[in-house]
Image (cartoon, rainbow, N blue to C red; front, side, top):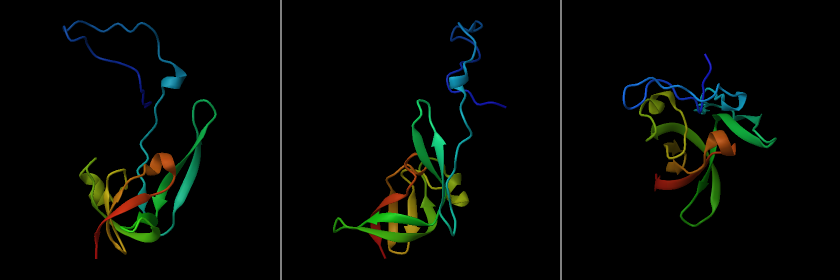
Length: 129
C-alpha cells in the first residue's frame, strides 16, 4: 500500500463528503520510515531527492561523534538507547532519532543530528561516567 504525503481523505469538518480537486500526483508519494538502529557496523545509503540532490541515510550506527564539555569532538561507541522522546517503543528497539538519549562509552549523550537526513550521528555529552 502506498504512503501519500499530501493526500487528504475522509470527510469535511461539517460532516459532508470531501471531494478532492484533483487526482494524486507521483511527487506526492511518501515512503516507509527509516529507523536507524544500533549495530556492530555503520551502514549508510545515498538517496536521490526531488530536484536531483542527494541525502545520506544511516541504516545502522555503531559510533557517534561526541562533543565534550571542552568543545572538542571524540568518536565514541554507542551501547544502547536510554530514552527517546519521539516514541517510547524506540528505546526497546534501539532506534536512534534526533533528541534521543544514547549511552556511549563516555557517558550519556543527546543526539543532535538527524541520522536519516545527515548520514551521521552527532551527539552532545549530557552526563559523564
